[in-house]
Image (cartoon, rainbow, N blue to C red; front, side):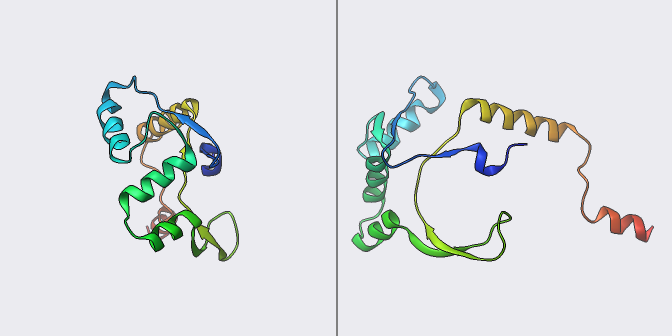
Length: 127
């Protein structure tokens, strides 16, 4: 199974995105989003994030911390203890091949028998 950090690519602020408007299910929602934030189907990541922030929040101080990042501490399974840093808004790109692989894994997991619980060993010892 692919680890979470390998499932997506965090896009750089300098990257450019071209949205696909061929998906009939998403076409109306995408058009509504782009209209609401005054963006087009082709956009720079930095401009897109700015448009989202400015259209949703009318407070300069909040806009600034959303753009610059909010100080925080994070604890993950990949490191020991708390790590100080900032949470920032960003866009993630997921390649179609990875999405398909994840969907296949979910189907495989759901078709298998009930997954083992960490409590199964305790239950077996009690019986």
